[in-house]
Amino acid sequence: NSLSQAHRNAAFMTYFSPEDFWGNLFPQMFDVSDKTNFPPVFGSNHAGFLLTGPLKEDWTKPCPRELTFEERREKCISFQEAIYGTERLARLEAIKKAVDPQFIFNCVNCVGNNLPEASKSEDDEPSPAEPETPLGNSSDEPSGASFVSSFVAAISATAVYLLSHII
Image 1 (cartoon, rainbow, N blue to C red):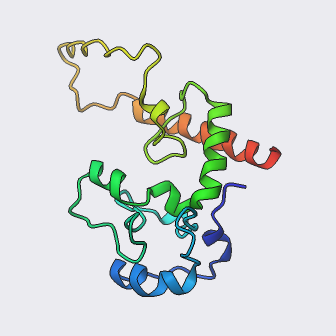
Image 2 (cartoon, rainbow, N blue to C red):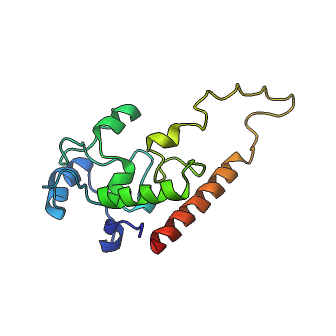
């Protein structure tokens, strides 16, 4: 199923500096000999926005914080791969593609949002310009969009969870 092995095996959670964790503890806790199969390390409920795995080229070195998001995508183990591991993430992405081939249910850091198909629109055309805000309707007023996005993400996550138990 979709729960990470790290989440299943953990008795408690603690914090270590990235240098100490990746440089000292990680190589002792996990088999790092197969560079094509990154193990699941983090529990998703404690994963922060800037979380990534280590450098792709050297799993004993943390992903530098000063890298841009684009550089992190290129040089570091992804958020999703650090949570689910290489094998489980590939399985969950396959389920995501089967359940939601148009990537309608897509959210930041959700399984599948990092796939190239997720960033393409149906027509791959630029979206029309945003309409001007009508008078008296301040742009900082709640629009309900965040509620809808959260609701859609919850439905998507539920569908992926249920299908991962069926398949």
